[in-house]
Length: 180
Image (tube, rainbow, N blue to C red):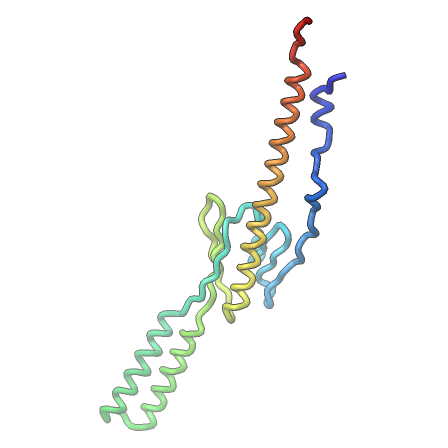
């Protein structure tokens, strides 16, 4: 007896034994807890993003240009003023120390996290600290994003193959047989 549409649609999708489902990856958090990466979500400062809606995550170290330039100018100005004998030793030392501190403060900078969303504008976040930690988290997030997109594509491919098989089975069962 041929199978009906309801029987074919109710049947579970066939899964090949070689395609075992791997366990979900562990949750990864930043040291300060501002970024959390799970198997299917990225949470940044309390704002959640599904990995399927993301295209890419990028971290870029950013220097604070105003403080960097101001420190350089103050340091260079007081050094030149001291060398030209326009300023005495103690004010020159104070000015050079201030310029060096401003330069170091500007060089410290921040890390800009850019979250690219599919079909939408990118979201920007700023994080303090060394960029190495944030670069590792961004690389892991990008790996999981690609992995999640590949899994979704495989699911869609399996669903389309099942629908094609169902359609072929239905058309085969409804074809009239020619009399012999």
